[in-house]
Length: 364
Image 1: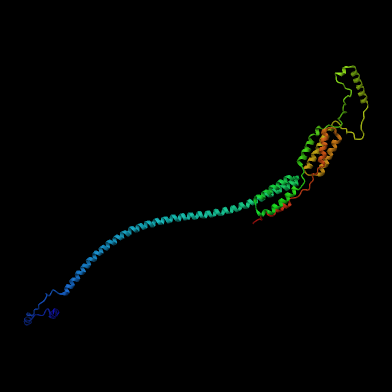
Image 2 (image 1 turned 135 degrees about the vertical axis):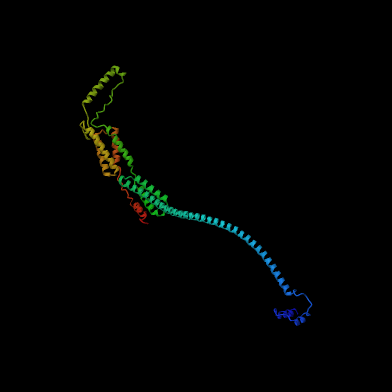
């Protein structure tokens, strides 16, 4: 009904004047019910407006709370961001420090590797040098032994030199030196099998013979030995008369014996020497013995024996063989001249060849 009234009211023109007959007919039309302003649509609109206002207020409140929460969280996030930046900066500094330390460690590692390589090369060089030194010592010992044999004929010195070389090889314990040690052992056994010649003792005996040359008496200087008188009486008995006659008879017999001289002709007479020739004879005898010493050291058998025989002939011809010193000198010369000093000495070519074989090749 209200809709009908509203439609009729709307159907009427606003500016058109109302006619009396229309007013008469309209006046008595009155309806009963709620007032005109009490429209449900208005109520709904008002409720809607109130709801919207309430929602707007609530929204504003929530928005304010949200803004506060956002601001708080933004503040927290700012502090967290600052802390994060601080931590990130510290982490970067630590990373930079660690990188620096890592670089330093890498440098030290590279340096240690270089030092290790250098030490390895030095150790290899030292080991190689040690082997070369050992081989050089062995070569020196064998060369010394060969020189002792060739130049001086010193068998004992050569044996000692080879023993030293063999001990050096045994101390090294290198298997590559087995052939060398075998060669050295063979040469050492050859030297040990040689007959021993006491060169030192023979040299000392010659030296003693040279020393007594000046004291040997010459045969031409010897006078006949005076014999003890057979009838000699002690001084106490010479005072008696019988003692006087005995002494007189002994003197007469001595004078008679002096008139007769018995001499042997089955041996040569001692050679006569002029007064100035005795000195030169002794010096020539010393020279013969010195030449014999040199021949002994040189292992010259022929010269050694020839010089000793010449010295022996000098002693037998010019010196008194009845004296003990002359007999000792003759005995020494005879024993020395009968001694063999020329011994065929072996060579050490086997050991020298083994040393050349054991040496490392150049550029190995």
